[in-house]
View (spheres, rainbow, N blue to C red):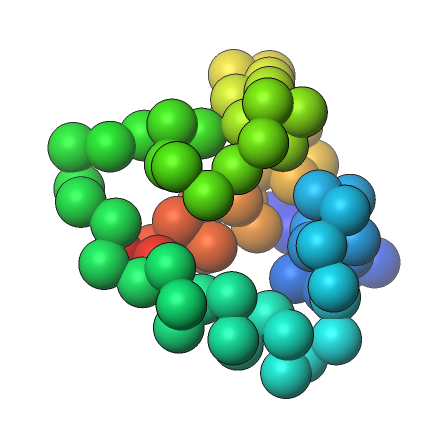
Length: 76
């Protein structure tokens, strides 16, 4: 379950990306089509810090993990 106070906007802010709704939609549209066999953290559009955050959050099943899964699904 996503922590009640966390939204996709918060995840984008955590990743250091513009986090308004339009910017999030633009990011997803620009990067959509990520192949299923590519782990989200290995996608070419992340920098090292972003990729590390995503990987760690998934491995530790952190409070961000469900939002990261949602983002992954939206990018496929």
